[in-house]
Image 1 (cartoon, rainbow, N blue to C red):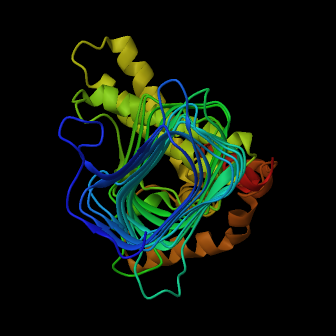
Image 2: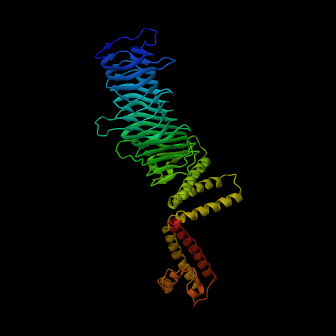
Image 3: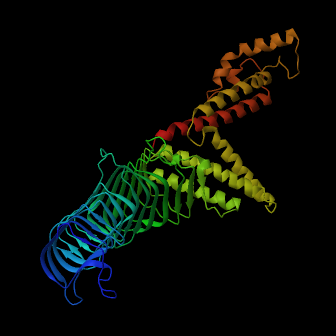
Length: 513
């Protein structure tokens, strides 16, 4: 059929009412239609009891005003090149195709492949320009699926289908046309040789993957900007990779990871592209989720609610600040908020310890202890707190405050400086107590100041001896009768010396297992 035009459909009330061209229960060797216009649809239907047998179907520059439906048919090959399919689009329902399937229209409202008994033996090639949606709903695909250089204004969906070879989506970044796929949905689908989506920096509104025991295979997305990524369900058998992808909203909701999720590099390389909003983890167990070169700090809000994080793996991650961490929005009890924040830091500390990442674990330990101090302060100020509990919590606060002197094992400079300062302050007090010529009475005269300075400089070697924990006061002042107060100041300095040496050594050990 060449250069044909039709403006009418089938008989009202019949199966072909909305179709200009219809075939029912036929055996066909080949049909070729080119440069034609059909105001209504095209239909190839098998009988309920028997599939229609069709050889080759070829359409070139055909404009179909309504849907194009192939249902309950055994088909050798199918080509649709150029042309437009409107309304319900192109539908394959319960179809078996023995050889190639090539679809490359200028515009197609929808492409739907459905039916549990649908079977495609050879490669399915989908290209063209604009689609409303592309839906793979059920069916078995023996050979590879190649989708390239398309824009989808609706969604690309894979649901309850079985792909025995590779599914590959690619885009030519040298093409002047800007490609776009609005949403990508994956549900209960088996990818035996994986699905690879190389977006070449295209923009997509949403990626949603619903996991279950029915889904399996490798899902690999690269170089794509998603405004939202959502993971739900239980990941039993999928390995999911998001490489060099960015996402404004990343959500794990009621998600349990028993296999592998790997997020690699979420940077925003292009100026003006992207507006990071939130990382949300709610009612989830991330299991062995991997974050490579992942920047948590780009999200103004990192909200973690009733979830487990203690088995995640990180490499080269940039972590969020304390002020970015949030819990459940509806929670107003300050104690519960602090308790939840402390638990989050504890789990991240454990995750770092499992990787032998001592530096990161110490950082989260410090954050955990600081939040714990705030929680203790809240409980200590409770009017119902008994005196004994008040003393215990005050002691805990003092211990935490002392732990800050080396930033909970992360800095040796502060305890070193404090040790020098404490020794400088105690040294003159020790000299005054040990030397009988100097008294505690203030004397600001020139003679008094001169005498005080003379004694201080006379014993200047003693200052350095104060850093020796094995020293004796009697050896430092052999010509003096030692007063009890001198032993007090000496003992006090020894306490400072021992404590700050311990703090310094603890900080040095942050690089030691």
